Length: 265
View (cartoon, rainbow, N blue to C red):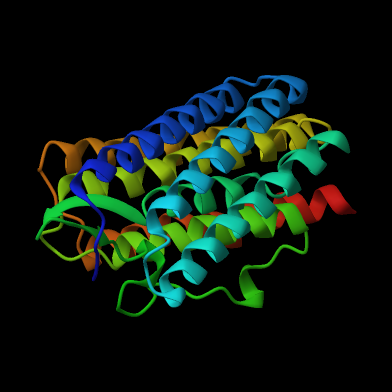
């Protein structure tokens, strides 16, 4: 971790700004989850983008004394977040919305936790990006897992990336870190299953009902795991990560491949 020498009075502004943006993001995600129409989501997302621009300008004013390397990394992460937001807004304008959604949400979350105020020697501590944790992936994306449907494959890769992050958590990690990753996994899974079911609804009714039933079963398993972690009945260990890998891979290689290949015939 790198120490950032910022006056103590500046820390609350950054902390409050990121908390405000996190609250706005959660509201947008909740609207998406409830099935809000894209014009509503687009309006809220555009307001979020404007607020993020204001926050970034304030942060650059505070971080101007830092090394060029730190500023360049922070600016690159911010610009990546804006690009992801613009991609989703473009999806909305084109009548879509699922293609870039999960990448955007994850990118925003990474930006918001990049500078976490911590009491450490009177400065602000640069937190390490969750995706950069040391360790090997539990599961790697291969062509065997690809269905050949771009939006489904992108969703599956987002699920795999999150499972890998969960598997890389230290055995006795902070409960809040574990809970945040599990909640992200559940959110992505819920949205993904919802999208799959909408596409399957136009095909064979019995096949669609069977697929929906398995989705409900998978979500129930995930809910039980989250409850067990929150109540400290289990820890997020390698064994738990393996369980999540099987939870997803078995679904992709069996019912997903069968049903979506049948739908494309």
